[in-house]
Every structure is written in C-alpha cells, then in structure tokens.
Length: 446
Image 1 (cartoon, rainbow, N blue to C red):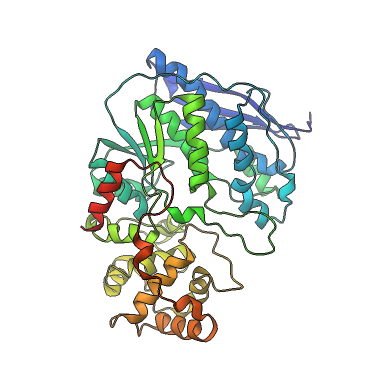
Image 2 (cartoon, rainbow, N blue to C red; image 1 turned 90 degrees about the vertical axis):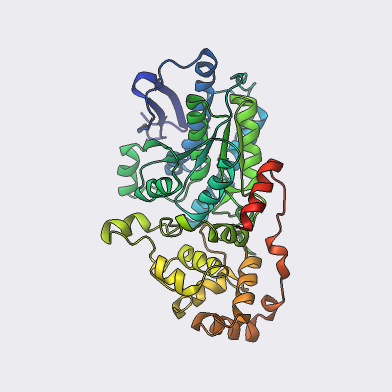
C-alpha cells in the first residue's frame, strides 16, 4: 500500500541482545529496518532506562535521512513523536542544509525539503544522577580525533568510540592505548535494493546520525561527555554565487549543528550528558601543528575517504594520494613536518605532483572554483600555508609550490597577501571548557 508520506514506525529496543531497530516506511509502502548493535545492556539503572527511549527517539529522527532521500520532497509523518520547538528547528536544518550536498549533486529543489513544526512538548529529560567523570571520544581514524583524544585524556578517563568496523580506527586506538567501544550500524537491505534500481542517493549528515548514536552509547555506558573533534573550518561551506541556497558538506560538523543538537540533548534526553567539539575554535593548521608532536600516531592515521577500498586492494597503503583530502592533509602537515618524512610515512608527495594544482587552486579559493565537497580547511589557511612554503628554502622549489606561486602572482595576487599568524589563534564561539582549551594550547608547544 502506498502513502503520500514517508513514515517513522515505532523502533524496537532489545536490551538483552544489545539491539535497537529503527523502522521506517517509504511512500510506496517499502519497509526499512536499520539495526544498531551494542553490547548487551540489560540491567540499566531506572534513570538510564528512562533516558534510553529519548535517546533512541533522537537517533530515529536523524537516521531517517538515509532513507528519506529516496522520497525527497514528500512530507514526513512523525505522528509517533510530538516535537518541541528546539527539535523542529534542528530537524528543519538537518533535512535542508544537512542534505544540501545531496540536493545540489542531484539537481533537486531545496524548496522541496520537508518542514517540521513544533507539535507539543519534548519528552521530559531524564536526570541520570552523579557518576564518575568519563568521556566518550569518537575516533575517525584521522589527525583531528587523535588530537582531541590526547587533550581530553589529560583531564579525565576516556573511551574511544566508532560506528562501524575499521582496521584503521582499531590501529589508532592501539597506538593511543585507549579502550575502543564500537556500534555496528546495519542499514536496511531495502535501501541498497532501491539504490541499485536507480533510487536517489547521495551524501547525508553522517556526523549528526553518529552523534545521536553516541548519545545512546553514553546513556548505556554511563558517560557524562561526548567530545567530538570538529574544527572551525566546518562552519565554512561550499556555497558560491548563484547557488541560491546554502551548501555545506560538513554542516553536521559545524557549530550551528553542535549548538542545536546539544540543546535538544539537554532538553529532550538528559542534561547530564554534555556534547561539544574539543577543536571547535581551532584552524586545521593549528590542529596539524599539534598532531606533528604526536609521533606515535603519524604512521597509523588516514583521512583518505578511499582508504577502506585501498586497504583491501593494497594492504598497508592508507592514502590514495590523489583525492582532495589526501592533498589537503599533505599540504597542512608540510608546514610542521619535513616533506621527505611525509612522503615516507604517507606514501606520496602531493607537492611534487602537478596534477594536484587544480585541487589546490580550489582550496585557495581562486575565483571560479568551489571549495571541494570534502572535509577540508578554509581558503585563508590554505593561503597561509602556501605563503610559508613559498618562502622556505626547503619547499619553495617543489614543483607544485613553484607553479602555485606563479599562477597566484599572475592571476590572483590577493592570495599572496600575508595572512600573518592570526590563523593559528583560537577563534569563534564554542562550548570548550577552559581547562581543555589550556591543554590544547600546551599540546601545541609539544
């Protein structure tokens, strides 16, 4: 039976099996069942048992983006849940700017994004009571999360967190000697069948979904903090003149999302779990400077989104060396680590490869280019790095640096204006505790 709406169907919680099932129904009647697999969690305290359905509710609402994109433009039937004003505001952003890359790439109309209205009161937040401080720190396998991990662990016990299974993440956890807890997320097979048949597909706000799953894990595991490693460059999107709407590949890593999501957690789940990004005030350049001092992680991380496929095809190789992310990371690390060392540990040298020049021009913000739809830094910090490389004796004659210098001088001299070291200063709003900001500052000096 078909429907005019995409529907949220009541989730199932099976504590003894450690399984939570998120259920949906598409406009054509297709049922989707997504499973989240935790360690068994029977025997929770009364307070945590009360908070759990509230946390599952939030995940149910956000994970729906993975399935709703098949029916983009249809209204969403969430009669299962009355929404507070804060929840409706969050969802309106998640299903518009959070899906903006999907909308842009598929040539869809942003005006067709669903609208959510406040329809009642949020669930009363559960008081979890006092517990020993401990933080859940998501590990993505790249430099940012290990910087956050090292800063937070100096202040309180930490556990690494990951949604899925990744040999890279496991290796990072071993290098950091940190316990890793994982959640297996099994998407509905019906989604893949629809995609194979030509259904709409594309980028969804994965960090938003993983944040909600982390809240469930924090309720179950007794954590008082969830500390992500999202930096300030996530606030700067990919919009260019003429788009007509906001596009941001990293929106669910932005402060706008963090602030809205944190408010909903405190108002609708529990005030006793804090949620924030440790690196919110920092530039990618500042984070790279800290990472340069964390030698035990240098050989184990990867930020390449092709890494999982590469590792299957070529075990031991973690970087493709060709994507925007590989080239960006190589660039910013080259400011604080020798290029010869980077080439040895990463397996490529992006500053010798002239095919990288168009990517670097887009990262520099040259007119007529769009910031890559990737997790990369702001054009001002890329300009800062190139300015330094152009002046340094050991890097100024590298082929890419020399070519970029020539093109900027000829076509875009504004990018050559000295940015100074202001790019290294913490900037912008955040929820970072003062003691953590002090620890990050100390780490930046080794």
